[in-house]
Image (cartoon, rainbow, N blue to C red):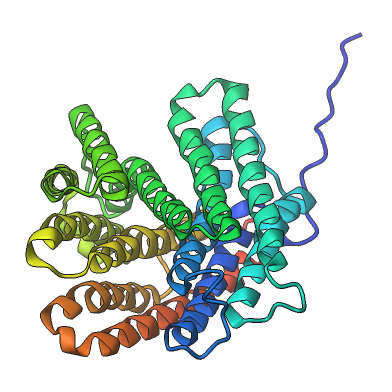
Length: 411
């Protein structure tokens, strides 16, 4: 007699926010972006009791924007996208909550340190953060690695290598803190930053053309946006050279060549992606401007040694475009699609959100070059615009991220 295989029980989780990783990690990243920037405004102006002898406040800020905010977005995106790419079920429910809890405990420890609240634990707060940060990145990398190996999608190994190096970079940050070697901490922060930018360039060259094609096709505009293999190779080679030179071998001639190379190759790529129809769709022009902002940032790196403005301005330009604007645009688009909502009808607030992020970019990276005497004013405007931007995201997107899909599907 032929056996009948009954369908397995559909997945379920204790709350919709734990259905897929993008829900809880995007929500947490947005809230964290507001809290972290408000606290940084106080740390920056000397209004907290942060222990500056244990950790330079600038590295406190840099670490949490990269290993806190950016990695939360990366986790939310990768643990959702890998399921689409491989067909392997990613953690949900309590398993997802366990991964997220590691991220949250580490972040709370860093926030307490920034406030100067040691609860009688002293530097043990950062030991606690180190343990749970390593557990967070390690568990995220493991589930991605397992899924990729299961279906033999070896083309994803580049992403896995970046996750492994991010773990190394975070470990260097903690090693520097615990041994009193701020050089190691600095290398760890910058290593993490450039690895995240590398991830953004890798994932962006895949998804931005796809989103442009799909977005314009809805309006009857059928275009084929292509990526050139030579552009991919040149972008990778120039970026790798730039990364090594800026971090380990600061030579202004080599840095200028490498930074110009990355910027020009990706400007050419952007020209190939362009269609005037993107300006009618904020979820497209935001991605396009984020990529353009990264290109302009690399040009700032190339010009900085010759014009004498602060290296920090180029760093902030690249971080705001590549980490801030790009992640915001990706979260705004992915959150709609994966919660079963119409990606062609985003919340009306998205235009204001993206405009505020453009203001952050201009005010933090370019206005200090034009009018250096008003540096503190430009920084304060950028901080305020960043906070306002993510408050709008929270108001618009947290309700949909925490509610079931309207079509009743699990996801």
